[in-house]
Length: 151
Image (cartoon, rainbow, N blue to C red; front, side, top):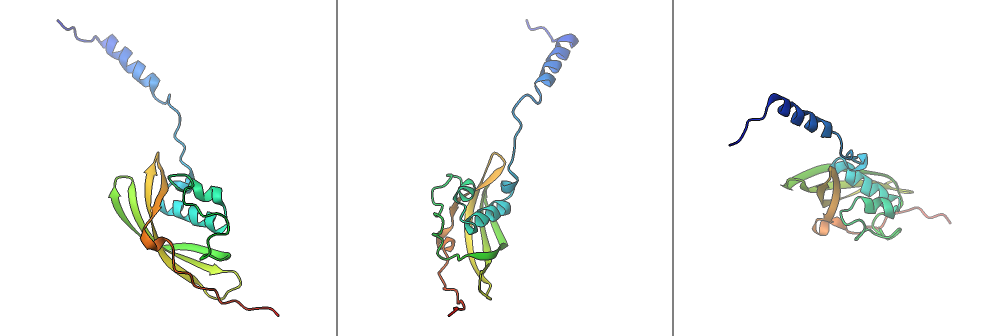
């Protein structure tokens, strides 16, 4: 036959439960990866600056598929780079498809350029990471930059 828990026993269980609160390791979320847009901005900023380590931190696999410094032939040295026109599609909880526009101003040029691209992002431990590019939109068509030539 089972005996009911006394009020002292209940109080001891409650005290034990409260003593365990806060005992785990605190979760630290890097502010660069708190949202899909901040992750993408961090990634493109790293690409613009030829920062392989910074770009690889933005990826789920940690670096497979990150271009080597100087290999982004379609993105010349750039003075200004912004991401706009975000459109998201939720695939599952913690997984998004994001299409957006990259606008940039090449150094030494008077022309602002742009292209549309997209990525799949995954949320891991409270941080968003880039899982992969979406189709051909990930690599825009190369267009040479008209520049003035000093003689």
